[in-house]
Length: 190
Ligand code: NI
Image 1 (cartoon, rainbow, N blue to C red):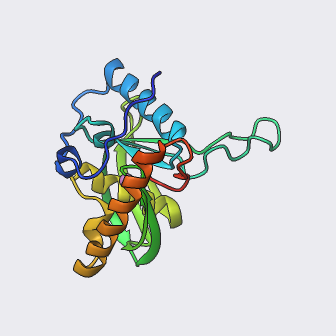
Image 2: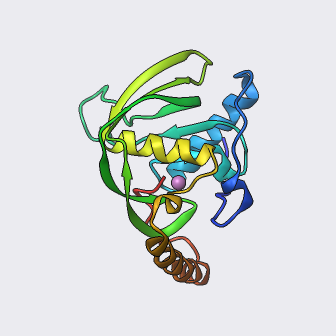
Image 3: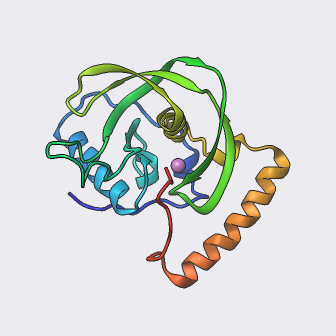
């Protein structure tokens, strides 16, 4: 496995609608595994393929990274989920959540999303599954599937808020490039 470079906003690849995966083969599985390693390395709770420069409909999510590490024997160490060609097939309610993005480091904004979603996708073996999600997992799924459609969380903000957020981001990015990204706090980012 290998840690891939994360594409930073603004970048054309973050504004492009991604292509569905035709066949889940070893090449796709290698990409999935590299994306997982990249997400944990960042660290973040979600990562979409365009964020590593690959314009395919794949995302990996773990909203509880490391949880259970010190728990009972046999406890899950995490909550890793792989979604290939994910589609939201049902949505309900609204929720407002403060979101961050590994491609837009240093900026956190409140975004309105559906409170509950049902998603259909293929897993790492190419088998179809459906999943109902709420709270952070629902938010993260919508954030990641947005990435596959060339949408970032900035695009959900009002004109004014977006302008302010962009200003904040420019400053955050300049600081980041100056200091190097070793101390970067990206834990809740996706
Ligand atoms: Ni993101």
